[in-house]
Length: 122
Image 1 (tube, helix red, strand yellow):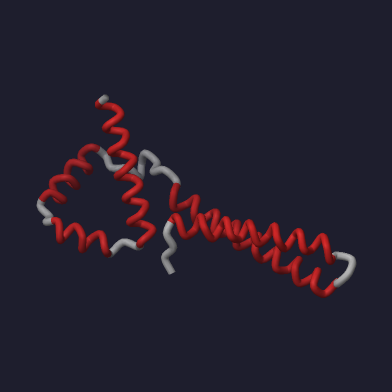
Image 2 (tube, rainbow, N blue to C red; image 1 turned 60 degrees about the vertical axis):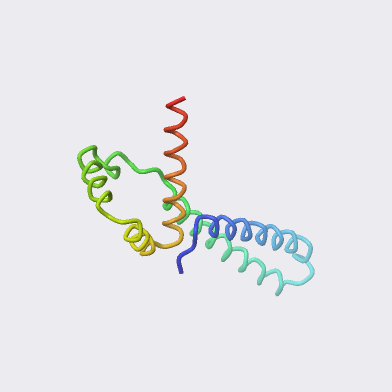
């Protein structure tokens, strides 16, 4: 399953909320119902591991490119020349091969680059 940036953020927030709800419930029943307390403790540990895993995934998918990952000027020029030979429909077909999260990340990158260029030109 490919989850978008927004999907991951939403799920992470939901997990945080559920962990808090379980911890509050655990404080109330800790001395009353040992079985439920044990189940809640296990569920909290599971959710904490899931939260950490999803946060790591989100961080990896949103980290900025390092200098070695980015296009060199020569490579960028070649890429621009090749993309100019593609029709709009061909670019759409290539883009559809990306996951939704990759496409949303691309939209964010393009929007950010346009904003930077507009800011510099002002």
